[in-house]
Image (cartoon, rainbow, N blue to C red; front, side):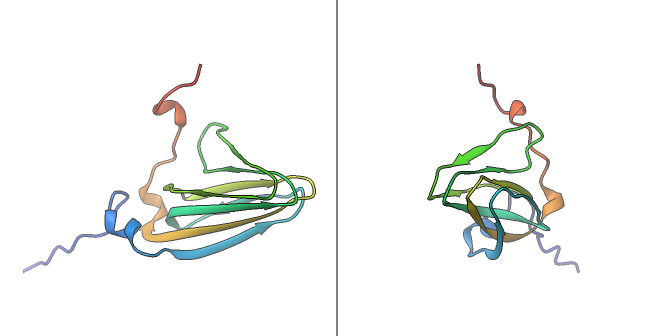
Length: 118
């Protein structure tokens, strides 16, 4: 008799409700860092100290979010890739809360599949 236990998939809610496994990265002034993750994120926090930074979550288009000078932003997103660009004079820190869901189980997102901006 098989138990057929459920395996976490991209929409397995309990994986996003429990505490995440921390993954921390930094980018010095003027650096661009591409963070490839083996597990899916449930939340990503980005801090820009001394200047502005931008963050992108691996979309196929150039959808970026700017973190203002000396600000912290938290995103509740499913991501397996994070790209940060640290502006001149900026130290940028990233803390990603990882789930137990394998990164290969979520697609590469394209914002154009979900809406448009005119």
